[in-house]
Length: 393
Ligand SMILES: CC(=O)CC(=O)SCCNC(=O)CCNC(=O)[C@H](O)C(C)(C)COP(=O)(O)OP(=O)(O)OC[C@H]1O[C@@H](n2cnc3c(N)ncnc32)[C@H](O)[C@@H]1OP(=O)(O)O
Image 1 (cartoon, helix red, strand yellow):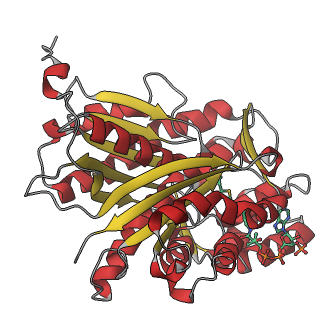
Image 2 (cartoon, protein in one colour; image 1 turned 90 degrees about the vertical axis):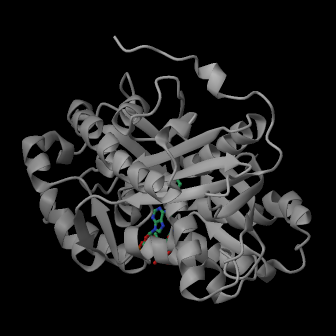
């Protein structure tokens, strides 16, 4: 049996002097890539649903308007053949799905975490906390966080927590909690790991579940991580400072978006009312945060990291906030290249924002703006909003 050092000795209970920042980002994708143009044929073929011609045409129409051009998946046709209940609508298939998730979730998450640690460039022993943020990949004990900590060689005293299962805003919750930990514990370094695999909710198309048909048109697999800490060492390179984060629940909107784990796997409903609820409430939800930025009358003076929930959601935010076309480009690119990966999609968008800023020779990681808003939406309806400060490039 290995010996334990005293973890509390490594964590200084003094508060940090400054605000927390994201110090590194890393992403990972599964090997199978499917182009959106091919997806209706692929999806109806592998689910043995080609006879549902009208539904397939509807699915094709949705795919064409989705803003997605490709997405990645761990689910192979062999996995489906070995577990036919996965594609038999309403058949019990939770065991088969869980077996795949148990193996594939840590694998992809570890790949993203290793890239993040490599970019950070510090010894893994400096990681004091690990947050695993997921809706699909944590339903076993010990959970994915344990497997990730073990594979990365984190200290046995690393403080592990699960942020589970918040749907699409889970990464934002994880980053907000990491900020609180980092600012309240000098020298804390929090590894935030997000991973979602849609094998949890991959079903044959059904006329009774059009909300899930929408999900199949836009959702994809991915993993993304960030390291969060305050008072950076000279060898650490902050990417975005996390200025202030919070959550707002939009009252009486819980029927717009929901999910349940059943014997048939995860099912969910994406109701059309979601868009109207966001349209009616987004400005109110943002009001306090915008006041804090001092940019209430100059919304194009901010940069935006918006969870790419769907093409219509990005369009809606652009219209409601009266943003110029370039402002939500990072979200559109992530949606286009990978689909909506739930939690990881937000971290991919942070990564895309800094990548594009460098490519454009912008003066900051926020495309030239100093302050920005990170926004994610999910069941509740819950809105997670964080003010970010970019760093000079
Ligand atoms: C998981 C989480 O926690 C958080 C999340 O991010 S959840 C995901 C949130 N995203 C969404 O809900 C998707 C948002 N919607 C969109 O992006 C777009 O509406 C879309 C790409 C789905 C379709 O594009 P559009 O411009 O609205 O096209 P539109 O022609 O109106 O709709 C296409 C078809 O889909 C149907 N449709 C669209 N949204 C629907 C919905 N939510 N429920 C049922 N049907 C829907 C329309 O009725 C239409 O059907 P017909 O072609 O048979 O008439």
